[in-house]
Image (cartoon, rainbow, N blue to C red; front, top):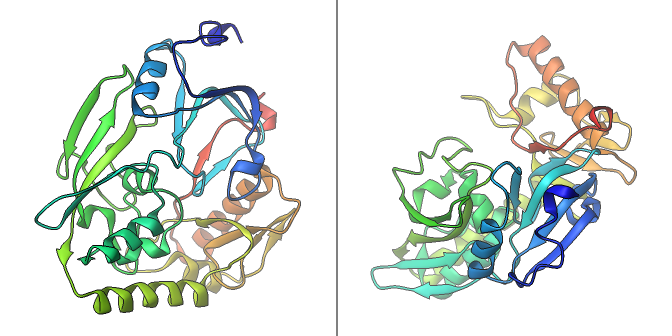
Length: 305
């Protein structure tokens, strides 16, 4: 707690601060340990002030909706920052451009684009979490990715200063960007295209329909578990390795979509990690292909504490 002594009872910032806070019920997988220090900023200015109070040696992790992460049972040391829904400012520009704050849900970005006759955002209807997280990992589905529509990204650096990155500087690749754990996406400007609402709605409906038919719903899941290797789908490799429905503890491979792991009700983070490592081993044994985690594994295991 000594590393946070200057944060306790500080009146310099306006957000909510918690110490030794359980993250289990905040994650989509409904597992995970505790955050040594959790901060939920009030606004962008408040977040910049908060960052300047943190010692440079203290580790920082930044999350949005905790949708595509597996927080280990031993929790997260250092400072954990959650970007709240209040980071949802919107600015509509000419030439089919929009600027959005990073806390806005992906599905709401898709709806906003529809309301403004902007095409190119339809795929976001099928992606969980907020737009900041989607940018950081270059999220995508059904043939589209964030890199296709991002023009410029505004980043809050570790020292509390703002820096702008254009699309090229973001170095987007498959489920990756240049963003580091201690860099915070504040807002981004997107380039859409003018399109008829009827056409946009058809595409959104197709994305939602495909998602509902092919992915588990109304269960605790973290989205796609593994990245797709080149020229093959991860779920196909898992399925053909005979692992559909395989279970370790309370973590199970969804029979509906084999690249989704679900919490059957009593899973631990260790169950999910063990299941993932078992899948990686079995797929490599059967196909000679080593799967790579898409879900981000964060924190310490109980054994490491």
